[in-house]
Amino acid sequence: MQSRLEEFEFNYETLQFMKESGTNDEQTKEVLVSETNLDSNLVTLLLSLKSTFFRAVLLRYKLCAERKVSQEGVEANLGSFSSKFRLVTDHLFSSETKEVSAELEEMEEEEEEEEEENKVELAEEEVDEVVEAEEVEENVFARFVKARVKKTGNKKDKVKSSQFYTTFREWYEEHFEEEGVPSKKELKAFLNDNLGTSIKNVWNGVSLD
Image (tube, rainbow, N blue to C red; front, side, top):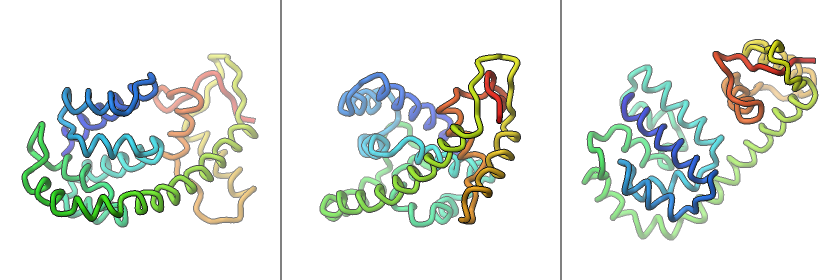
């Protein structure tokens, strides 16, 4: 799974790059299906997902790969999202390099009519819940950056990931009564998107107030 996961993540980054470059979904899908080992349905799924959410899902796959978790274990780990990401899980555990396994194709054919009828409704419900949670979380991170982070532009100013998270956790606990401080990895993903990618878990040109 590890090697296929690395290849899959690279292909996903390519998909994101094409989207950010203005390539429409149909063109992106056509290129990836013809040039990579991703099949059409899998690319369609990836195009429909919010980047920040799917990066969190990728992190879950990585942790499972590091621990050599079986396919059944991965599906159990994904919980309620197991069926949503079945295509991804099957792809990562498949030994094929271009086509989806015959078993998966047969299963997809059997479920195709039912999935088409329920696809929009189920997708909207799940995406709305996830997007709402993500927007709240991202808003928390954005408020923290606005309140406590200063972009100095001075390369001598450096903040480590551990320093960011310690300050964020203190700030969060001071301003919110809810339990469950967002994780360090979630904060790091937000900072990478908004302050630039860290170098060895260090951001340059910023300071903490």
